[in-house]
Length: 424
Ligand code: ATP
Ligand code: MG
Image (cartoon, rainbow, N blue to C red):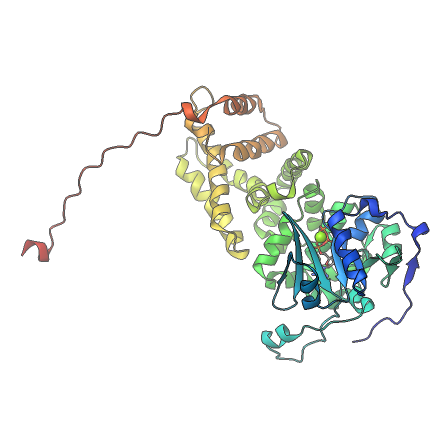
């Protein structure tokens, strides 16, 4: 593999804004311990990027010359994970400081190589090689705990200034190597308000179909990571511009092609979701997929004849969600959460609004998220939401203990079927 042999750009402490005060104290402990034991230790990835542009990082990852077993011996609270590449997770209560040994990009596999050969490729590398194997220039920066300098092997400092998301190395090669990086490009552009650099953009347009071969679990994770920090509406816009939407949510792309109104409604819904500024843990696949497919669901509901039965709502919800659930191995729990939330819309529309609504429904776990989703849909499509607000207030006041348990109907004993054996 050819490596850029250029010298790194090094920004001394007085030329960059990163202060140890903004670095998590447990991450600092890990950095210092590694350093004291004679290893190179850098803060790497998103933590450096965010600190340089004045954002509070979500997490602090560490890169080091120490091998995984050496890291384990230094920290009692350390667990090694990962088969392909061993990563050290150093735990401080709920918090995990991910510490990885510098590694290089695996050499291209010979044609016909097996996945087992791929799995054996666990090669450590130098810091410069570690920077080159990262995805985007803005994610390839290091902060050295020894000198407090920022080290840039990949041109990330320039791209941070220019607000550009650019792959490290040839974009076609990097996206073919790992297509999920295309979704990651959308995440960083949306969250940071950056542009995707021209050649990187052109490579996404060329390689977008490769995404359909990516591992479902990674796709699910990266899709959900598009939403936090109020970036879901921006991410949807960029998915559309890059035509990744056709591959990631084909059913939505098809509906948007037919009616631009769907795009406007979805945009309005996502803007409201963004305003709510939910923590990342609350933006579950049920929330993300529930929002994305809601306008498609509503479009189909509009086509139903008057006074449909609730089962029609359920049928439509299932038929819309099933392809994506299969594509991304959506856990059943989330799938049914969304079905319940969509069915709530049917219940309210068909059975009437308060006071006829049954109290027991207000305490169901799907009720509040379902109500928020429905409210955001109604608001985005210009419909009144006062009745839903009233319902929300009712739900806040209701005491679950006051609600009697549902009465069980007595079952009649089943009659044994007469078969040849018991007849004999
Ligand atoms: P966030 O703030 O959303 O966590 P991040 O930049 O920290 O963003 P992570 O997904 O947490 O992103 O990954 C940490 C770092 O690991 C990235 O900054 C990047 O350097 C590297 N990385 C992660 N995924 C890939 C990938 N698919 N290919 C190459 N490098 C990657
Ligand atoms: Mg991160």
